[in-house]
Image (spheres, rainbow, N blue to C red):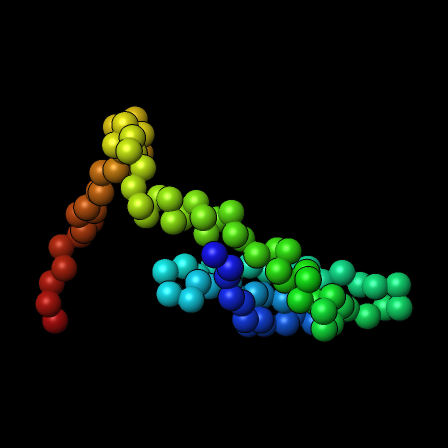
Length: 103
């Protein structure tokens, strides 16, 4: 399935665009930063060149992977069983060092 896209930002300081790729059904949406190449004539690609760059950077592999994960991976519970979360640090409650007397 092809992804649609919208250019969401252009950062002139870095020559970078932010492109949001999304599926038609709304089940997938990711935003990627793309550094625009500077051509020999000191310009950025536009028109068909820019379209080709944006399409070539489309995260179709990520979309396909996400679809597979959402459909269910049969042994995901086996991976979950290997997880050892970081211990939760005990919170210490400090007692006031001197008695507070209302005025």
